[in-house]
Amino acid sequence: MTEPYACAPLIREIGRGKDGSRALARDQAGELMGAILDGRVSELELGAVLLALRMKGESVSEVAGFLDAAQARMTRVEAPAGRPVVVLPTYNGSRHAPNLVPLLAWTVAQAGLPVLLHGQASDPARAGAGSNAARVPTIDILEQLGIEASSDADAAARALRDRGLAYLPLAVASPGLARVVGLRRILGVRNVAHTLAKLLRPVQGPSLLLSAYTHPEFGAMLAELFALRREAALLMRATEGEAVASTRRPQRIARWLDGVEATAVEGAERAEAGLPALPAREAAPTAAWVRAIQQGREPLPAAIAAQRDAILDAAARLGASA
Image 1 (cartoon, rainbow, N blue to C red):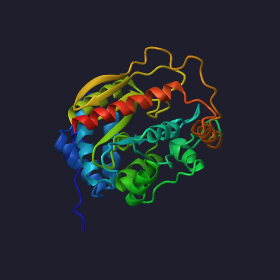
Image 2: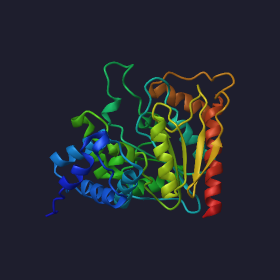
Image 3: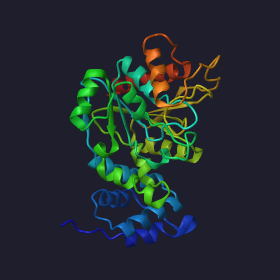
């Protein structure tokens, strides 16, 4: 029988509100998250921990420790030899405009870099009253393009080898983390597992993570995290929560290699000179538009091309430093 993990001493540290709480050390955070992912924390204590962290706000040391535990327990996909894998978490989809994550993934894969997407299509954030409220998840568009979610790591590895692109459900990559993400249905609010899911790199070998933030303070925390962990990443302001360039507004993209930040895309000018005509945001029209770009009947938006070039450049630098 798995030994229960007592959270009370840690809850006393993190559960005293925004001003009275103390951040956990990285090793404490790692031990706590490991126990959560292993199912050793009772439901009552788990709810208390998640809400206490949300009210306090997670520190860099805590997120680093939580990620240590999550990465140690995740499924890893075998990557094609000789190339870093672009890891593209996709958990938000889009509500107001077409979801361009599948287009970005395709154009990077066509340029010769394998792309592993991972997500959780059943997140209740996508549900809503009426078509204007519901989000369009990436997997819906991928399925319209003939790309299905991989059932396990071996299937994802085959997809990376065969077409350079694979989608791995979070429930396969990290069942424990998927369970905690799903608690949003019960608690009614996001928790730290949503942050961790977007930071997972479920691959064997070198990888380049595409990361995004909505609030500036969260972007600053991610910058500290990438400097601390010294892992390769591109960081940008999110488009509806996703790490894909907007065709409507400029975005700076920062590059992190070996703990050092540089600018990958300036983002000082408008994203497009003459904005492209985008499709309806539903999955079928978006997939048809992506297919038209694949066939050369529609142009690739300049903002997506600039992001693709930044990804290729970062991957080349990563490979040169390996």
